[in-house]
Image (cartoon, rainbow, N blue to C red; front, side, top):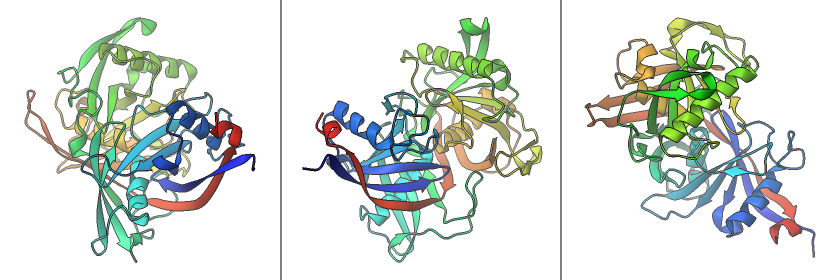
Length: 377
């Protein structure tokens, strides 16, 4: 008998991230054993993930578990953030970049039947128990790859997949504004101060705060963010979690520092990004351990855009006026356009649009291997 067990996988880049896609029924049913198998598959914990498929970066150590739909949708999708430094797979949030990959995967694997050159995929994200919509362009019955849509943080161009999160409000807390307020003052003992924050729950639960509240400018990149700033962000995240009666030390609420538009040089490309090219600056410092995202998470993008459309939030206060639904977020690698529309007010708000575009591409498929001793526990 072989010392190793093989398991089918597909590696897909979705937006600015990459994930290993696995089928739910091909994994161990026991959650503890399942996660032990996943950690070995990724080579975690190890800073290089040299003995597995992980990419040694928060954006490339991601997992998508796919299964038959358990509600009125086309498929179930569970997102997992596989830690690089700990023996931990976190399931307490969704990933908007990988959601684009799920749309492409659903077409290629036959979960939906394309209608001509488009396929609408109803994705049941089990992390948030919400259904999001993915409109996937199709060529020859498969998810399209070639196109002229460009996104900062990914070289080249591709076919755009439109993701709409308008029906995902309240996925973590049951309400778009979990506290019932546009903004709240949180006491942060570690900072010996109070920080004004906005807690918004659509796509993923986020806590927004002025960059200055964590000693930041909003222009930071992964290489310039300091340990003191990371500690300050962590303190704000923990205080926000406690205010909602949630455990601290998790992935949510996702901490987002916001500031008024300003010019900077994009990470990676070295491109000059002018203040007139964006509606606001935003930096996500997330994951476990906390680290600056090199680009911008899709779910945080829709949450940011929706928050910007709600007067009185800390996001709206720094957002430049704009016409129509389009809002552009300035992030470390460049800019991200998001389309958001919110109507009503005073506890009666309805999100009519919360969408963005991403590209996705299947990179590899085949069999990965884990030790039989791990698989059998």
